[in-house]
Image (cartoon, rainbow, N blue to C red; front, top):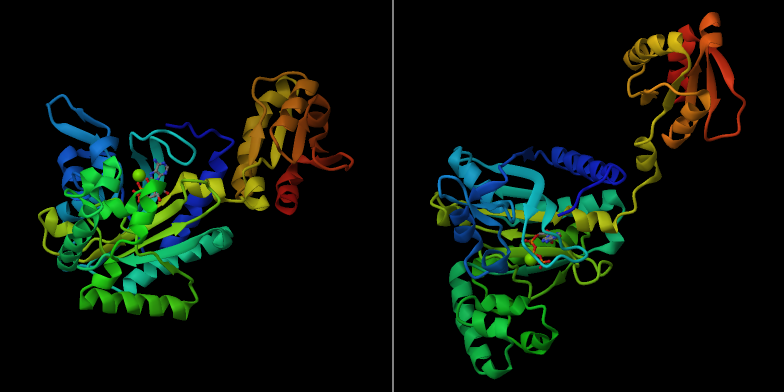
Length: 413
Ligand code: ATP
Ligand code: MG
């Protein structure tokens, strides 16, 4: 679990602001859920035989003896909240959220025990138009961040649950014939969650998986039709994709469209955004059958990939550091600064606190990253002026009347 230090927070803020703006531009509304839920919610939604539920959850008993879990992902909580507050009753919802998620994984680059996601979930829309909207929206986000060249889209359809059931039988037959070649995980999954064998990251399993029967050849008609329409929409919109028949996603609740945005620039942890349709989940959790689709985007991996624009780095820096020398200046400084903050919207100004010599205050001014320093001492006070010193460019210092400082700032920052 990482601390995010002041040096890094401008990057986070940039991404968060960009995502918030993106959501606004598509008419999505923010929802905020608690960080803990009843353990049963995750077991019932994500599935007992998944990496998350089998070995990654932070589960504890609270003082009442209830079993609670730090959320490992947001979809289950979002569905729970939407059901509980009647947001799904004959309504369409387009929702988004962000926040920390918790998984007890082996920590490594791109894989942490507390990490952060943006999540998007829509309810009441059966697709494939909304499927396309989510993909176009994520695509727009990469464009905005200038990282379109770093990511590629992989697509698959998992079909209806009936079609998937039939396919599972075909798949189990295929793997049963090869049982002695399966690794331990896959042997265990063969009769509990055979689809997940296809998701194996073990290179030894790769050949077997490549030759396995493909789900996409066993789709029901509706899923096939929807998938074709989705692909056509993406073609028309000029979004490139690769159909990956082994893309099954790690969570049980998916059906029909699934997708991932992957990169080869982050080593083994290459998925930065993953999503899909989960038409069965609301009903499975006790609600009325409701079509739904969503995606989750890992913010740490995104930051790893991103080149932050220069203007964003600059934005987080101060405009002015205000040096105050002598007792008279000390008492005048704060009220002056308040006045400028009133008069100049967006001004980033820091007043020196803790007094000190001119030399030590100028050192602090330099370290603050500010472009200019204002200096107010006894001499200046007498004349009702202050001295402007340029910290980042070779330019002579100036003296300006205190009454004109607001105008000066409006012109120069
Ligand atoms: P993986 O196969 O990498 O374990 P997953 O299927 O468990 O991924 P999801 O549950 O789909 O991942 O989460 C969506 C996204 O959240 C991932 O694509 C990734 O960007 C991010 N993510 C997931 N787990 C972690 C983690 N432990 N640390 C950092 N980011 C993560
Ligand atoms: Mg995982």
